[in-house]
Structures are given as C-alpha cells and as structure tokens.
Length: 132
Figure 1 (cartoon, rainbow, N blue to C red):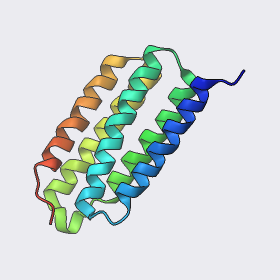
Figure 2 (figure 1 turned 30 degrees about the horizontal axis):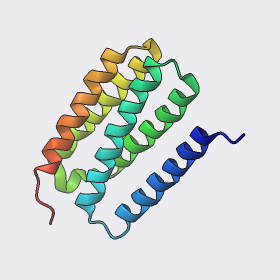
Figure 3 (figure 1 turned 90 degrees about the vertical axis):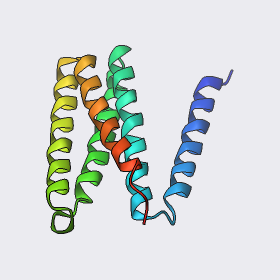
Figure 4 (figure 1 turned 120 degrees about the vertical axis):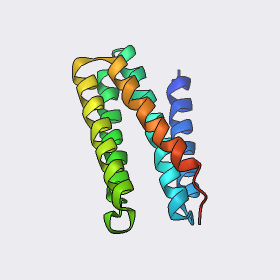
C-alpha cells in the first residue's frame, strides 16, 4: 500500500520549489530580498516546530536552510551605499544568528521566538520601502 502522506508531502515540496523559482525569475533586487525575508520567516517557524516536536533530523535541515538564507541577506549588504543602515542590518543579522543558534543548542523555543520577531520586524520595515 503506497504511503499517501509521503507522496503528498513530496508533491507539496516540489510545488513550493517551482513556485519559489518562478517568483525569483525576473524579480527586482527589492523583491528578491523580500523573498529571502519570507523564506527566513518560514524556516524560523519550521525550526520552532522541529524543536517542539523533537524532530532533530529535520531541525538540522532547517538550521542549514536558516544559515544559507541569512548568509544570502548578509551578502547583499552594500556598505558603500548603505552606510549606517547596512551596518545596523549586519549587526541585527548577527544577533539573529546568535540567538537562533543558541536557541537550537539549548532547545529553547523562547529564544528562537525572540530572533523570529526581530526578523519579522526587519522584514516589515523592508516591505514598507517602495521598490525602485
């Protein structure tokens, strides 16, 4: 008997990858950063879920995704043009990274939640900036 839940999960994951690729293709720099913030929000939620349900293998996968997304955001900072704002974002990203990693190590959802809220606040500020 086939495992319908696994097949459905794989189909959903494939659709999510295709949807993300379509959104990225041709997106402006502003839109790409917005997509990274959306993905950061999702992965931080997934990290909390994995901790809550003791899904340690999944937690490792989400931790890797989190670090890749944060690295992408950091790599996009332009310190020449962004000045103090870029520096403030670099510090904020460093704090988010530290809090998430400590939260994962301590299995502390509250610490993850603090970092998640900080990421949401940054994403909200970014969303308020007009593209262009």
